[in-house]
Length: 345
Image (cartoon, rainbow, N blue to C red; front, side):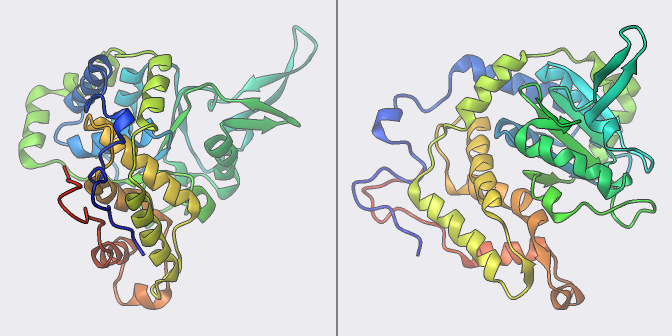
């Protein structure tokens, strides 16, 4: 049962009194964040909502999977984000013949020193683009599991920490394309969000053609912050207040996915945690110190849908995980203030 806000309590979303000294985050941090969003949006036209969601996932400390048809700007988006955040950026172009050592690194012979030395793999960076991740076999895909969860890599019996911050943004083509391997459930569960970019609106595509290719070069973007500032912003985003009634609402929705007759696999406890963190970051991007119900609803589909596995009967009926989740959300009452003593903003 989802608890209501009792009379005299703060309204849903509002922080407790000791944290309510200001509604907005420090002006400098918000200015930097809005500048980063604006610069990325100047490269990828007409996709403000997608860009904001990617930033929310990264501020929450998560990883992002961009799944869409070729040519809509997936790689362009990641390169632009890497430029404005700063730090070291590396790209891994996954192919069918790639081995795990090509990703995490391994021991190689150093002729000058006359001994084996560890050669770092491309994962040793702050922002990593795993391009076309589903074009490499599962054995190589699994090399990313430890990095995504533990922020470390193990090679030749030694565990090495990854640089902080560490953010993995992966792209993949639709599974119907030839030469692709589906990501296992364990790896999908480690992506905080799965997003699609979609085709541009006609006016945005016309603007892209009029501006020429010069506008589509992320290399022209300058870093807005340094990695240390980004880590402070992540810490701020993860301190956004969440009302206990909203926590109960999230647990109720996730629990419903685990008992749905249409789903073979529901959302994991990691998914619940990611949903709350993504909602906190969504509020932070909006400049608020507290989560409101709309933040949870806004983050629900990109955080939860890719973790759900349909039963065959539901698939035959034309159902999708996103539609099942939509129905669960529609049937789950959103907690509201019990009286005028608590107000909702």
